Amino acid sequence: MKSIKQNIKRWPVVLGVVCSVAIALSSCVKNHNVTPTKPIAGLALVDACPDAPALDFYLSGQQVNLNPITLGNYFNYFNAYAGNVPAVFYQAGTTTLVAKDTISLAANHSYTLFLANTEAHADFILTKDSVTAPASGTISVRFVDASPDAGVVDLIVKGASGSIVPSVGYRSVSGFMPVTVAATDSLQVRQSGTSTILASVPASHFVNGSVYTVWLYGLANTTVAAQKLKAGIMQNAYFY
Image (cartoon, rainbow, N blue to C red):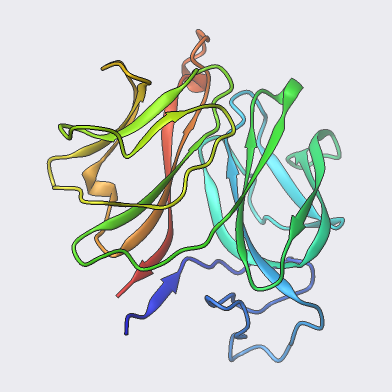
């Protein structure tokens, strides 16, 4: 039976909970004597908003992050109380609102929240992260299109025939798919049905036995270099 290591980070302020989330989101860190009194879920964050400033993130009125959140970066699963939870992004170090919404989290489940689109039209994309062990010698990958103007795209392995995930539009989230990636391969995001590469992730970023999320973010129609299309990658879990 395989063991799982899920990427969990502990933060000084996470709704008052200081337990590390295990796969069942129920085990507490041994050197803490605090036990959550409410059901909890795991939540990860991704900043895919190309023109947003550095951000602070709040759940139920409490700040989660220690350091500002910046474009293309993420931090992995932390504890959050389950239920309908107010989620707010502010400009880092201020009370200037960037985006807010209420997200629904079920106890004992893991989620990823993407902040997408431009700051003026910011969208929340909340994914439910159900992971299983990939077959030996493979990885598992899902794809999220967080670019508002890239059009329909395909996720492929360079040199392979066919797509891992075909015809994905903005705000779409695929399931986790088994993938074999050789050392010379890369995962490429292409305009759907064409050979036009919009972004790619080299094979060096992948470890067999791992579960990943790859996302497209940024803008296709911009002259600002920092806001152009890129692919992000997060390791959701590692089975060993």
